[in-house]
Image 1 (cartoon, rainbow, N blue to C red):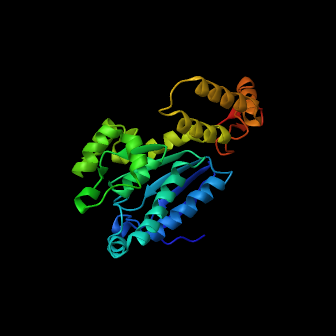
Image 2: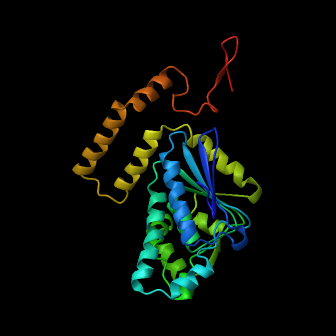
Length: 277
């Protein structure tokens, strides 16, 4: 599919990169970008050759939030039209959050409002030192509603009270301190830092990744009781009995890469039988 507002790239190492591609307006999103991101996320999740996905922005910003023209149009909507429009964004963020593949946000420049929602909905967020964050909605008389489940989970309720109410800007170092991003680096090392993470992610079992993400969502903030003990025992028993689980144990005992590792990363055999990277 040809996109107007994003780009989708795939490589032989099993990584898909979804680029927000409206650099002239700092990758601000509108209904077209929301629809295209929804399509791209579904396509990546359905592609068995892809092991992980990176979400990134072209130009000087990751994402400056909502497109001003789109906001102006929404201001003329009634409740029903606004609800339907907001539901499209909410569903796109939920799709990103629940993808089976591991997702990494590559953050540089501004990540404001809905842009912070995109970062928070990813599994891992890496930010350059020059990145800047802002939940600006309150200063516009609005609220960060559709992004709130992911932002609050990422930074915690205490930090959310401050930054959602003050709508102040804060730097990458503060985003790291409050846990909103898990890694920060100098701007020049952003791609190298992301690639190092991807090097680990693409070696994980696809079914194990999907089951682990589901496990985290099921266990987070849940009481440790008999139901949880039984649930977790069932999950690991299922993984152990699966074809992927058996292959993973076999490959470990045989000191080789498991079958799911992309060919681009697997050791090569030389003429003399030695393994070589």
